[in-house]
Every structure is written in structure tokens, then in C-alpha cells.
Image (cartoon, rainbow, N blue to C red; front, side, top):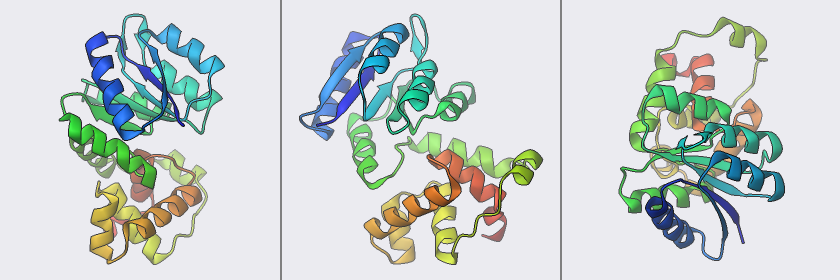
Length: 218
């Protein structure tokens, strides 16, 4: 049974999210909160496996809860569920430790499918968000401080192929088709790549692909 935190201030949205989450993760225990301070109290006393977090809340930003979970419960996966699709909300959430970022405007079936893919290690990202993240990192020049600070990491040719496709926003099944490998094999590669690079999200993987020059080789 999963312990899941649901942080959303609007009761009607919280209600359909709860129904959706229970469809994806049956028999889970859901703790509900409508404010940042309530969520932080829950985080201090309950061990969560998953948290669905809105950003715009009456007493602050859900980013604070994402950061608190990353600090106190690093094994918990935080997924932002919001209406905000701009850089000013997206990147602070990812930098705070969000594992995924979903838009409420999506069809509920698509949100459910994105959440199901988490079991294979795939971060849930709305398609437009994935494109925004990849475009952002692909357009950046190589950051000198990161390049100098980060040690060289040796990836195999196959791992480089998988990393590039993850960074470009392809799903695990799509990568499997492209490389003629099973989805489970691709998931194993992704876990190994994330471990080697010490990253935990598709956004961080995209930055590493940029740092390693994979976009230039493609």
C-alpha cells in the first residue's frame, strides 16, 4: 500500500484527483492537504512514497513542499499537478526536486497513463512540458562551472543512445521500438544511467546529455 500526499486547495479538483490516483494505485492511503503548512506538518510525521502537489496555494507555493520532501524523504517522488506551464513555475519546481510535472488541462486519462508509467521509472511529464524542458537545455551553452565541477562519467554507447532519446522526450516504449529492445530493458538502462550520472529526473538527464555533447553528435 502506498502512502500518497495530495496537496490541492480546490475541493472539486482534489476530489477528481483522488479518484484518479486510486484508480492508478488501488488500496493506497491518501493524505489530503489544502495549504502548504498543512502539507509540511504531514511530511514531518508521515512517510510518503508519492506526492501530487499543486503550486499556487493560499499560503504559499507547493515548491516548498517539494523541497521539504526532497530534504527529509528523498525516496518520495513529488509530481507537480498544476495549471502553470511557464518557465517561472516549471524550473523552480524541477530544481526543488520534482520528479514529474503534469498540467491539469490534460485529459484525465492521459494524466492516469503518465502516473502509471512511473512504475517503469519514467518521470511523468506533460508533452508540452517535456518539449519545453528539452528545448531549454538543448539551447543552452555548456555551463562552465558545471563542466569543470562534474567528473567524467563513462557511459557505454548503448547508454548514450538511451540517454539522448530520454533527453529528447521519447517515452520508454518509443525508445524500445527505436532500439529494438523491450520497454523493461530500456527501463533498466535508464535506472543505470541515472545512477551513474547521479540524476533523478528527465530534466537533469537532458542537462547531462547537453554537457556530454550528445545533441551535437545526433
